[in-house]
Length: 158
Image (tube, rainbow, N blue to C red; front, side, top):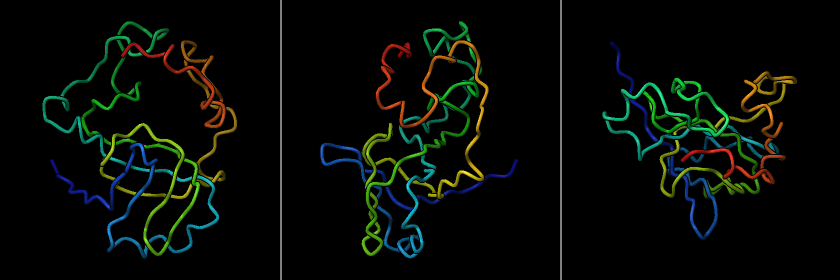
């Protein structure tokens, strides 16, 4: 099997000072032209779950309250997976292209999480007008904006 090597482009700072994406100096030039995008897709590493023991777990015991009793890990957003890669869509609050720092309102990554990649969110490629989801999560919000006011604590079993 071929192995792939990923290099973090920076870190996600997520603490009392706010949520910031801080790029390594060598990747700062890659931000040219990013101004004007309201949202980004972030690829990041679930670094707290990168141990080999987590990578062979292929199912989860009912992670969501209304979900089936057992689910395959690919049907969840669990950080425990064969490759602990996360994908999040985030709103951009500000961009400092010179310093390589982007401010975002929220992300469910831990402080100092490795940031793997940044891609602009473009509706023509990334938006699905009428997505279909299983009945157990049909009552979840229909957008990132609506999710902010949704009581997610009532949905998870962890």
